[in-house]
Length: 148
Image (cartoon, rainbow, N blue to C red; front, top):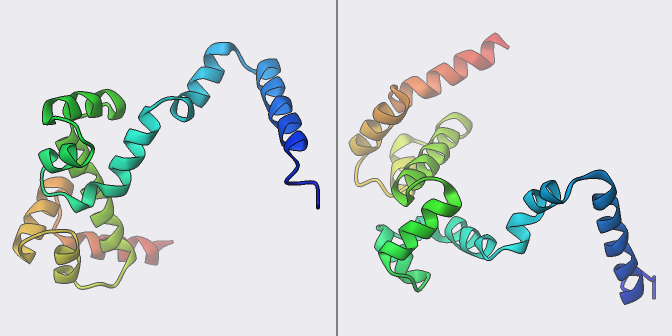
């Protein structure tokens, strides 16, 4: 009724969008921009990003996506540019850093929520990844905010 759900209007807008892209960018740049949308890798990477925290091993994640571990690892490395193990550690570190700096949660709670068996294993992980204990990370963040 408002015209926004009209198939013809939508078709014209899509054509307009692609015409603007063709005028402004080379074919290679358009491909780079739309690659993830047009490829099957988007589904793969989206599934990985949505579900990675549910699994304890790369094999479990591969099984979830109906792939052998070897095929999963090969495809994962091609799509993400690093091994699944490296990527998982990076994502876990990113989440932990955010939670340590941005929440007032106790470290034990952060550790449990992120799959650590103990607070000490959580602390070891932080020392290895960030060269600081969770307490030092939180204190440094607090000191930085005061200086601002």
